[in-house]
Image (spheres, one colour):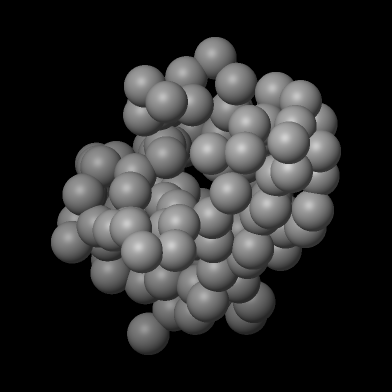
Length: 126
């Protein structure tokens, strides 16, 4: 079992930026694909973006493409979600998740990921 920990959430005005971090204290996931998801009140959890195990490729939902960037620092065992030009509709709890095997490619479905964090709240005011 791997427990992911997200941090960096908070409140920001529309147009602002935040950077979220995702780590797994005491565990390494540097070769595993990582996904970011979000869930707004009353809505299903949705895909935000993903990054491959070595960071060579990323994939984003259309709603965040061009505004959000995922990166990873495998030396620090941390994955980041840089969010720029934030909009009120980006308000949600943001989760990172890891696939159980480094052999599995990055994916966009909730069920493709095995280990999740508790999430971090992002609130964007208009």
